[in-house]
Length: 164
Image (tube, rainbow, N blue to C red; front, side, top):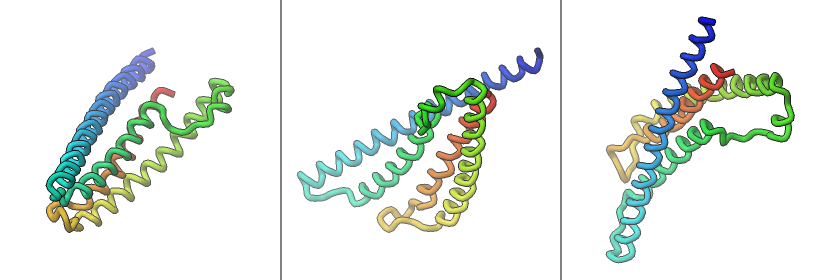
């Protein structure tokens, strides 16, 4: 009985933390989207009316879009938006669903660990590279989006395994 209570408390704490992380990720995505819209909108106005576009807008937009896609995919994964063969899964027994879920989580934990390690290595190796248009901005920051997305998914997988 005490173990069940501890397990339930652990699941509640992890669940609460994941909810906060999801909200923070969604807020981050919102800020990036608003920034992207503003930068591109101002750039269009400056280009069309004044023939003087913002030189760095395409670079910043591209990098923001990379973060939007990768962090957005992590949020989508948390919400259950990942691919799954529902035809088979829905017809399976609860025990078989648990086996499918455990297998899926195990494989995905392996994939996310590889993405975290390799993404961090690549980010570190690219940290000294700077874009010509924004000389103070490290390209390593852009590559940091890969391990961050993988970490977000890994944390969700840990929560899902605790719930099994």
